[in-house]
Length: 385
Image (cartoon, rainbow, N blue to C red):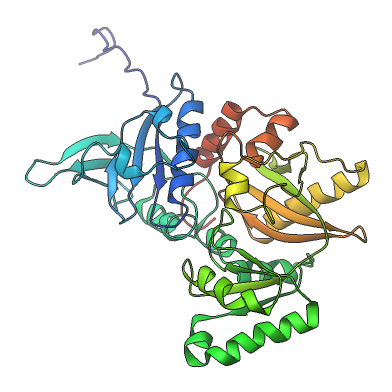
């Protein structure tokens, strides 16, 4: 029997893509991640996307949180936490581990689990270990869920400053002098490990910067002017990471540049300059986020210098096989040479962060920036690529 003349059911309108914004996490950058999530939630076009905010507490619980970005701001010099935003102190969100099923489930003890619907893309705004370092990216790859930003290897390389520098060196990018103290070295012979740093200072001079090898947001970093402050600086870095990195101070200007993935490949933003903060010894966590030391956008560079650093930023993006976005940080030394310090595969995304400010100055607004990142993730397949 022909069905040609039978009444046809009206086509169901396709639903909007659902974006899970995942934030918080177990690292010392938990609070800044929450602030970043607030900014992203405010910017997502709700006419174009559905949004599911998921916060990870500092003890690792995945919590369903209210979609209230106004509560995700720094107040009285303190950053917010996921525990303050969670809808329950016990309930947990579970991502699918079957690539054929993208449905997210929420469960509380003693209650029937509740389906929250399918997730089309994850926007992970976690900073530091257990989120920015490839661990979450690996989970999402197993789940078959697209996500914003770099993949497993690139995220891991971007988090570990030692291997980041090794990759850059292998691609011909210039890095500054550094030395690494691994946990086993410290455990085996503290005095030998300390002497390794002192010998490094003897070769390159004081001051030194002692920092966690796998942390960000300038947390745990100490500028050490002489040997008297070394032990305290080591202890502070080891509070955040048992592996520490020691860098020689480079005399010059701090220049940053954003990289964003467009349909035709990565492009660089206009660069910015970070001037020495008046009230701080260097551009530390408080200078960045609490006192909001302003950067200069665009950086006062010659056309040739600007073109060079933008090209180098894209080279760094490609060298580490990054995807989505990167902020590349450089020193412009007194002899006019650009030295790359590091990249951030999920840079600060707060309203005062340099990455969105640089793209704003380049002609890409904050909402457009967020939309481009989501669209890039939706275009990209999971798995080997």
